[in-house]
Length: 312
Image 1: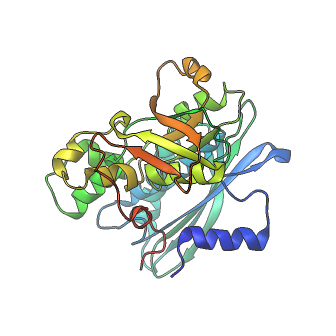
Image 2: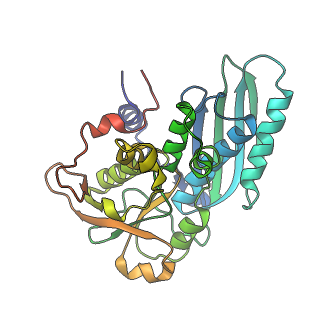
């Protein structure tokens, strides 16, 4: 079965569009960015672990995060919702209440959409962001010599999901990180509103390693990272001692921001960031290089650990 990246390559070659390559398309002539995101029941979420309110909140926040990671300001959203046949009045009311909660601290609003019947829940959201006063990022803009910086903690959402799935003793912070994530609008905006140089920026929706790899691959650079610098909730290690590093790198859905910026730019961010590594010249086929305290501690089969939107 073809994986997501292979399918994207087929689409890119078929359309031959200059706009494909980032999570948001930057339409410079209209001064906007546009993003499209789909959530599918039993692929991206389960009704067993999420309420309709939490689902609406998270579905909206996912799209705010894409706009933020482009460097733009979220402005408008349209929502396509497909539901199984039945009495869906309460579901819809709770779902859109969650959507509105996610938008509460932004100037964005829902301006339309579509609703249909289906055999399970499908959510498709189009988000539009305005670019005035912002320098828009691209994952192809990383430059040798730049620092790799991130916001927040990594691995919390994946740990929270695992706690729910395995019915472990609950941890409020980890579970909330999974069910009610927060898009890093302020962090991303502080970069895009002040930087003059080209820079790369993504969110960690599919995991920290995934973001590092995609930036390095598109920028033809090596992303050299020091594990000891990465921020994470140490309760993850207490819960999952054998796999906590996998959760930190590959878990996904933290919606933190990763960016590559010149070292001279860092003082403008007032220490509201964590430096986790450096952008280096690419050597051989190495795109992501992770330095552990124990040099024998290496990941194996990295590509199989990244989130797969096309499960077998």
